Length: 87
Image 1: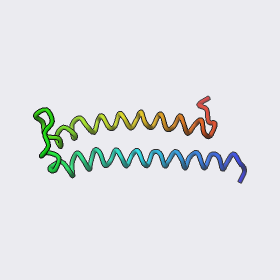
Image 2: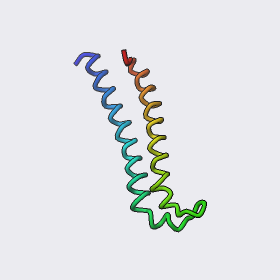
Image 3: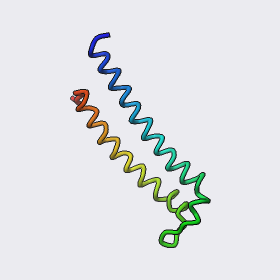
């Protein structure tokens, strides 16, 4: 294998690792916290609303947007590391 193929393979492997981790966080926060642990979280109230309800309606959306920002940051850093440009 030449250096360019190894570089592409390493870049793709790092990209998949980032995506897998972020998708796992998204799944746990939306499905796990919003659905599975909803009954436990409903015992806590914030502003008159049960935390499980709030998290299912608002929290998972906020986390999703944060994950997009984190993904952009991590991919920009990965692009610089592997000297990849969008040109």
